[in-house]
Length: 161
Image (tube, rainbow, N blue to C red):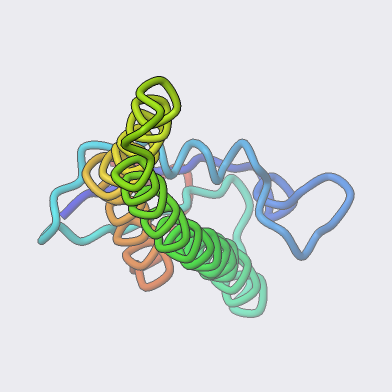
């Protein structure tokens, strides 16, 4: 289990300066950076060490903004992935179309070769997205899912391990 410790003075330290319903971007980036070496089966636990005693209501509030942050990032990543899949599908057909056109243009060697090259470059772009970008996106989606479901504990700073 990956344990992430966050030291704060009060609950406002975790919130954005201009919107108290949003997790501070610096905290979000810190939590994500702590999860970079996370394996697929590892779970995450966040421990918030506060200088001031947080009420039950404040604790629920902080849990909500932390989990909502990663749920929103997860939704955004899924939307982007869906758009990339659609564009990859379109590019695949475009690449095949250019390769087919190059076969039909046997009389013109230069244009035939040019359309063949364009077709293969387009198809290579699709393959690159599937092989490399898709893996990165899947890892981020898994990470966001874990962070949206993670266990969040609160302790006094004096009791910090």
